[in-house]
Image 1 (cartoon, helix red, strand yellow):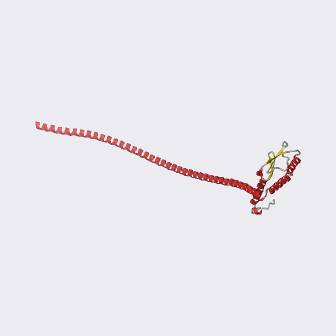
Image 2 (image 1 turned 90 degrees about the vertical axis):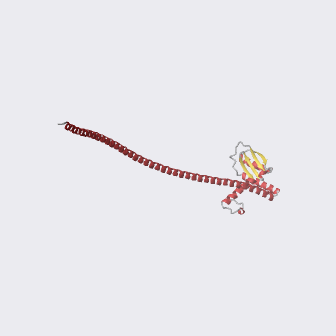
Image 3 (image 1 turned 60 degrees about the horizontal axis):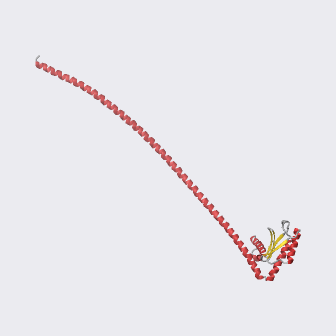
Length: 265
């Protein structure tokens, strides 16, 4: 075989060897690349699964958070509703208390006003009564002369002594040995002796009389045994008689003062 043929055979062998080596290297590279690709795919799948799991967990947490938020919102709305109702109830109660207090205060003010009116009315009535007594005395003084007033005084003292004979003196302290006598003018001897006689017959002992002059009683006599007082003065008589007339008017027994004739019930 010549050298050209050998060279050709070597070249063919070299080519065949190159193809074999290239095929082996390609196969090895393919295996490596395939293994690497699968590995990356597995990693990618694992990461994808992890992401999906995390996404699912996140979605679940978001759902739970949303449910918790709705729950808290519902509780807050319920709390606001209760607070509103309580506030309205409290406000209503306060309004009722204020109205009740205002009514109570108004009633108290009205009661005080009525009481004040009654007090003022009684005071005015008292003052009018006193003025009426003063006016009656003035009329008597204008109508009656000095002599007539003197006779009127004697009659009043005489009538007082007549009534004194019917007075129970058993309650008078036995230790008292003095009686005070108040008159508008000095007590005459006859009246004084009769007074002493009546007292002695009632008390079975002598009593000293202290006669005091007080022109404010106008006419009549006032007899005092310590704190016990028997008033037969004209002023007191007018007050008593005025009270009797007023009571009759209030009870409808008299239509007016002109119908009063002085008769007793």
